[in-house]
Each structure stands twice: as C-alpha cells, then as structure tokens.
Image (cartoon, rainbow, N blue to C red; front, side, top):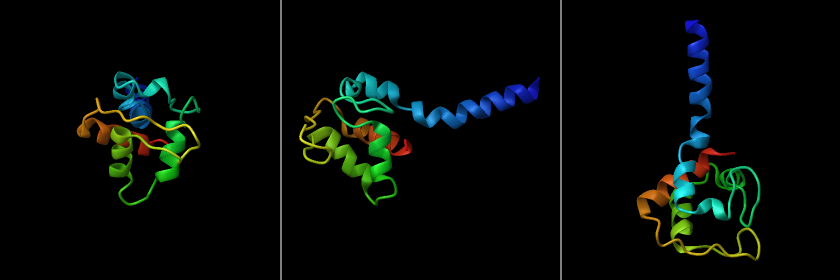
Length: 101
C-alpha cells in the first residue's frame, strides 16, 4: 500500500511544474489568448517554452514581453501589454512557461 502512495506522489510531483502557475496564468487572463498545449490566438505555452529553453536571460526577456507586449515573434498578431501583471508575477509566469516543452 505504501508503495502505491509513494508512486502516486512521485507521479504527481513529476507533473507539478506543468501546473505550478497555470492558476496564475488564468487569474491574469493569459488563457484568453494562450493554452498550455495548443495555439489559440497566441502560441501554446509549450511552444514558447521550447523556443526559448536554455537561452540566457530568457526568463527576464519573457517577463518583459508579458508586461510590455510583443509583436512579430509569432506572426502578425501582436500581444498587448499586460500592465496589470506585476514584475514578480510576470517572472513567475515566464519561469513556468520555460518549464513547458
């Protein structure tokens, strides 16, 4: 019985990063244009994570794009500025997106 509980806990903790800040993304209205695994208006978070994974400064760069907006990286539809998102929350969101690949 204990082995089952441990295996379940390990499985849940292994998937935790993918959901670590999805609630924050939902509360900041990110999910209106993005999804974790498919393109909506903007690219899937997994695609963003894969594109910028391992790049120095990627987290800070993405955090600034969240706050200030962005254009031309993923096509003609610009991402509007999200001035309601604090720098700390933007950094959490960027760090979370970078865990998705």
